[in-house]
Image (tube, rainbow, N blue to C red; front, side, top):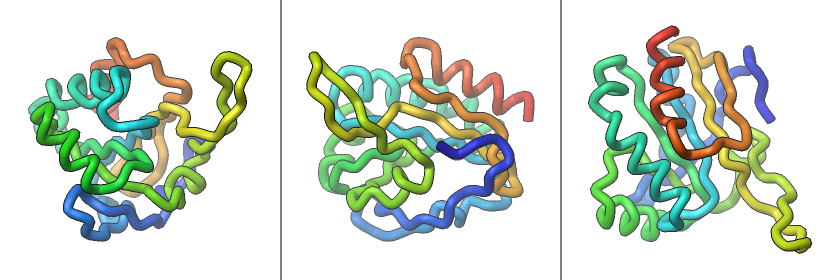
Length: 153
């Protein structure tokens, strides 16, 4: 997993329309990037809704919020529209961003091992340098905690 002081990885993602964009395009402004396992599941929905509820505060701080999963762009678009999400959702279908950030990990559920996204959040400063990492995120209160760290930048 990326560590404090690391540079933002130069990975390309797809937006909800399927258009490519480079994550390092945001260099020059602080950035919050969060990874979540699967769109339209309870925890992921709550997390996206919590970040959306604080969207005005993030915007006032000049910090975009990008949520990344391995879902297809069409699914992310449907997810965003269904819940009125205002965070930027990005598809990492091939898994390049997950690999670069170190969020694609072995997980276990009821004794069954499988690979999946570890819910994690990363805060980059305007120079694209990682300032803080939240691994193994618990959703409740997380978006507010990240906002406090943004304000401390």
